[in-house]
Length: 445
Image (cartoon, rainbow, N blue to C red):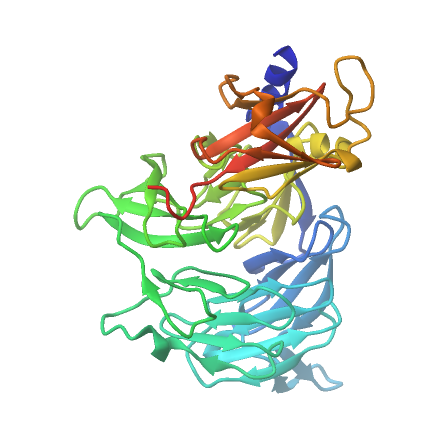
């Protein structure tokens, strides 16, 4: 039990302001718009050196060093006497949103319906013009399929951005729609209070949550479980809002409220929401961060440590990390990074040979003893199918210990967890502890 509580302690959030540091300062004040990471090493901050230009600030080592692989701005041309004779306009429209899909594939949405695509990590670019509104959101699920959204339209590509189709007409909704957030994973799309499980051919409307005045962030771990962040107006006709975080387990058809609280500044969560995995995530907006380590059951305010901070634009976990956050500022051309070397990510790395799947699950988990090796039982022998297996909830209460729950198939142990409530659980095999998420099944209320 002491070991379990030690692992639970590792999961607990601790305020470590000293671990924020400035990792980039551009020589001029530039506006930074969007930000995305292709993996744990490669990230791009989308910036603008002027009213019409675009500039991309990139890291290939996880945020420690940054450089500018591409800049596209207005150029003033002078003669030998130093007299202005001409102006060269930027090649592309001003950039506003980005998806760093893979190490090499980068897709950027621009003003006036332009999309640019790089297939060499952001060095060279091709453009396509869709003659529509300014693009606000770009989301890809793989190197071929993605969506691009303006305030009122959704466009879909299935050929890596070569061609785009307007799928907004498939919504079959007569009311006004404002797309403030969107998400895509495989065939699943969520956008503006509607979701589709067939890549936008048919759509279902979410059931509204009372008094919510804007959803600005959306993130799904699969086609069922997701989170949304936004705000609730406190007083009619006044710009004061509560921070709101919602959770769904049925694709967004219904939502439950995980957080609804007032936190200075009273502007709500107008940034976004991001989950590195099924239990660790952050939601942000207007100088504040909320973090969770238990799938959103509890959210803890994470205050910014610097006084020189302007307004941040985007916060992300580089993919594959739970111990790092990178944030870019809107006006001053600075990028900040937070690192917590004692995070869960390190624990997972040390026990990467231990496999529990599927995770999350609604009915069964399978423990693969054939790939453990590093774990040991009470006699300090290598873990085996006869090692004791116990499951605890987040309060440290044992919820499964009876071997009659276990079905042995060679080196695999299949455990029925369908009777457990949705939430985070810890599996103790000998002296090794791992975790999994139990979600509600399709037939559960």
